[in-house]
Amino acid sequence: MSILNIAFLQIAPCESLEKNLEKGIAACRRAAEMGADIALFPEMWSIGYDISRRSPEQWVPEAIPRDSRFIRAFKSLAAELDMAVAVTYLEKREGGPLNSVALFDRRGRELFNYSKVHTCDFGFERPLGRGEDFYTAALDTAKGTVNVGAMICYDREFPESARLLMLKGAEVILVPNACPMEINRLSQLRGRAYENMTAVATCNYPSSVPDCNGGSSLFDGVAYLPDGEGSRDMCVLLTDGEEGVYMGELDLDMLRRYREKEVHGNAYRRPDKYSLLTADNIEPPFVRKDRRN
Image (cartoon, rainbow, N blue to C red):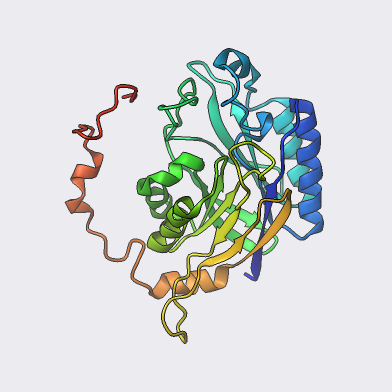
C-alpha cells in the first residue's frame, strides 16, 4: 500500500439539513479532486452539532433515520467518487436520538454505523441515546485494504475506546469532533495513537463555529523509526482554524512495519490483571448524580 490520503472536511454548517447536504456533497467532491481515499466529516454534520444553543425540544425532532435521503445521498456519492465517506448525523431512534457516523466504502456499501458510546450526560447531550459497541471494518480503497474503526469526540477521553478498537483490529481510527482542540485534548489523541500503535484521524469544525477552533489532526501512530535517534513527532497534520478541506497523508506501510516490531498495543498486555476495569461501582470523588447506568 502506498500513502493513504484522508480528507478532513473542516467546514462550517449551514442553517438547514438541505444546505448541509449540498455543502457536504461539494466538500466531498473537492476531497475527491484532491485524491482522497477517505473523506471525514466533523461531528453531527446533519445539524452542525447545533445542540448547545437550543432546547432539546428544538433539535431532537431534527433527527433523521439511517435510510433518509441525506444518508442515501452520501452512500451514492461514495460510489460515484470511488472514495470512502464517513458522514455524521443526528440519528432518529426510539429512546432518544443517536450521535452517529456512517462509513461507506468506495462502492457505496455501508461498513458500519457507529453511535457515540460516551455521551456528555453532564451537559446538553443528556437527551441523546447511547451507542452500545465499537466497530471496525476492512475498508477497500484504491490503495488496498485498511482496517478502520471510529469513535466520536468525548469517546476520546476514555482510553478504553481506542484500546477496544485496536483489539478489534483497527489500524486507523476516525474521530468526528466538535469542541476546542486545545493542548490537552490533542495530547489525548496523541496518547491514544501512541499506546495502541494506531493512526488517529480527527476532524473538527473551523473557528467560525462557536466553541470550536479547527485543529483537525492526524497522528500516524509511529513513535520511533528503526534508524532514528529517540522518538519522532507522530503528528503529521494539524490544521489551523480556517475553514477548508485538508489532506492528511498516512504511510500505512510504515505503520504496519512498526506494529510488527514495537512493544505497545497488544504485545505485552496482561488482561487477567484488569478485572477492575469492568467493575461498575463508582466511589467518591467520582460519584455524579446525573450519571446513567
